[in-house]
Amino acid sequence: MGIDNVTRDHVLQTLAEYDGLGREVFLAKYGFKPARSYLIHHDGRRYDSKAVVGVAHRHVNGHALGSGDFSGGAATVVPVLTRLGFRVEGPRAGKDSADSGFATRLLVSPAFGSAESRRHWKDTLDQPVTFTDSKYAESLTDDQLGRLKEFHPDGQARFWGATSGHDGKMAEVAAGDVVLFTGKNHVRAIGEIGAIFQNSSFADVMWPPKQGGESWHTVYSLREFGLAEIPYTTLSALLGYKSNFQYPGQLVLSGERARAGIDGLLITTRTALEDAGAVAPPRPVSELPVERQHIRSTTVERAAQQVLYNRHESALVIEFCGSLTDTTAIRFASAAGVCDIFLNGPEGRELIEAKSRVERGYVREALAQLLDYARYAPGAVDRLTALFPQPLAPKERLLLHHYGIDIIHRVSPGVFERVPASDQAREQMRSMWESHELSR
Image (cartoon, rainbow, N blue to C red):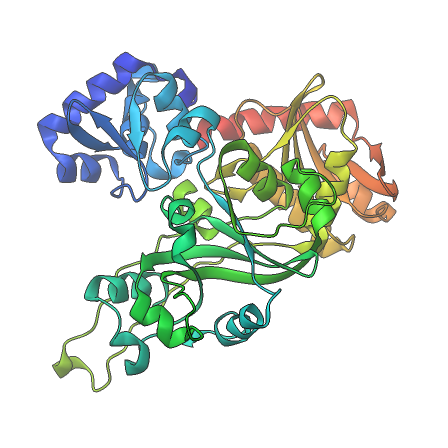
């Protein structure tokens, strides 16, 4: 049984235990770390959301879930708690997360139109800025410098900013939100926001305003950054805008529209992976005592992660989803990562993993990911399917069919063909998925 079986009374019993033990003892007892994003607000007190839901599960079947047994965050824990009548707070937990279950915001930022923007792009997006250099660090507060080092322990980061005219839009933007940098009728790059703060002095060192011009005083670093080449027409189709929309100014989108853009483009943020327990969150920067070293340094350990944006797989997924007529594609984050496509339609629940190539290494990767994601799917999965841009060779097709996995390949623009596994193989695998569900 999953977290959807947790009731309000289960949560209230857990909150009482939390109060009795105290936060540190409660978290240590059940093996949870302090929440980074989402806190339950109840009777004037705040509680770690994922830990409370995991422990509350003990009242369902006598078994408390550990941190690695389920994913937390806006797509899982927040909707459960909201449905049970609890208020959830966090940097991105507000009305949108309660209403739609999706709290990440999507910024659309013109960045390559004017000569000034192109110059800023060259200075702080094309290359990272060493913000620990005195030239920059002297303009930062201790808190701002510490926050930057938390996200960027090597002292370097790419930056972008916004003028005071966008203060209202930028007020709710937080770490983990996604920004699309636009120009010349395309999304030219995709980034994930790290540290964000207002500091005109720091901004003016990076982007000296022209005489009479405004400071880009809202500054944000980019945890992840990758080039893209997405036509406005593709973006507009995902966001529900007219095909000739030109994105003339900065947008900050939330709720289902943000989900449509982020999921539609197959964007996977590091923050989403951290919230789901797939990778470790950033650690506070620490320095060894002087007597133990001659040069100040910090060891940076970074876990492997999925790519923020894969152009070829994204294009394939967008084209395939455009061919669907009776169901809506979503994604879910888990300790295994973020899946490509999850369908819950008339023919049941189907988990689909897309690959941009058909060589054996890609086929084996699709197989491993599908088996891993199936353990965390929201509900028992009826089909596992691998999506490819062209037909597979017989040897690779037999590999997937042996494990009960269907194959869908592209035949022509907007047209896809399914090559199903045998019903017998699929039934055998379904029993394995169910046993995985119980053991995770």
